[in-house]
Image 1 (tube, rainbow, N blue to C red):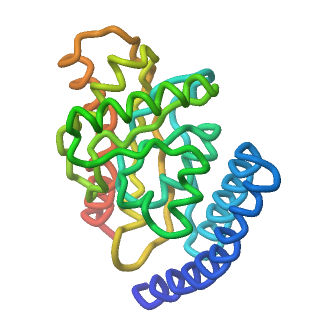
Image 2: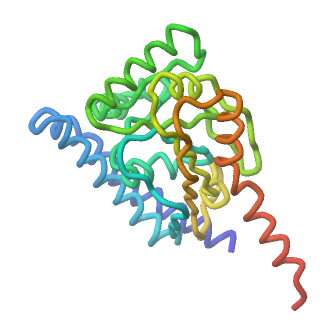
Length: 245
């Protein structure tokens, strides 16, 4: 199984990243000739290609639990792997994603991300960074887009449940949008390092949280909702392993 997982991972890397080079390099041409709306469609085609390759090389399936909302909302998402940064761009209809500056500064890719319309934020989360993030988020709303933030601030391993960073509370207060937490188990199959493996990645959408609530209570509710799947997969595996026969 380990050898097969390595083979599948190598095949995915070869196909997806090999094809991504011309796709990313073609993005500036799309933006210059046809505008940012066309660039976002270009990005969605890249995301769907990622989904296709993940399905047929690794064996990744996707399950959606709960109701995906319509209209503009503030999405608050667990972050366990690179997989959801691709998948949610398409599933959530091109949201403006809050992205740390280090990623937005990557040559070529960073230019494309900025043209797509990400919200770039410094990880220090000082007052100036917060004001800049809120200003860009409001601009995204004015353009008719939702906002997506990975509120823990970085990618975490399955089972880890760090507190929410200050950026979520700032956006919640400033934007006045319904907040939709999203839990997932992507890190169980799509780790930061090592081999990827087949399985079903679940995206669980919690019911919307109304704007204007008590900050502490809302943060507690969001934290619980984005961590709703933590341990569930491992617990199922442990039960299965302990079963006789």
